[in-house]
Image (cartoon, helix red, strand yellow):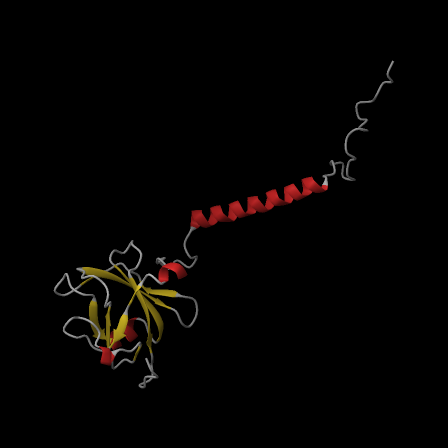
Length: 193
């Protein structure tokens, strides 16, 4: 006959920890650690997806990745457009003072009827959207090549001095087709183009 065993006798079970919980094996602790890391990544990913945005309340613009940025057509900046609506080679510059005329064109783009222009400040702190691509700009004589001229003083009034990235969209909810960088400088001299 077998001796009677008490119900709380756990000779076959793992020894209990001092707090009374069963001790975990090294493999179980490793698994629990990875499970905790996975859970945290899922929680953070879910929060970013749920709340989205860039956390500062600005409009989010499509940002070209390094691989797609190479696919953007270049925007040519200068101070004068020719009769073909393209920036004249002799006037090309990416630096403007308030006394200049600000001209830009996309030399290799197909003719269009309207475009949407986004502008972001890239100097003096975090990137800041100063003009989202929400208002259509009709191209005179459309469909025509993309090219515009405005007084640079208007840009100084709206944006202020700094370095800016311009992105041109054919539709506001589509990726940009062209991009380029220009500078608005407060001094009266240009230091190259």
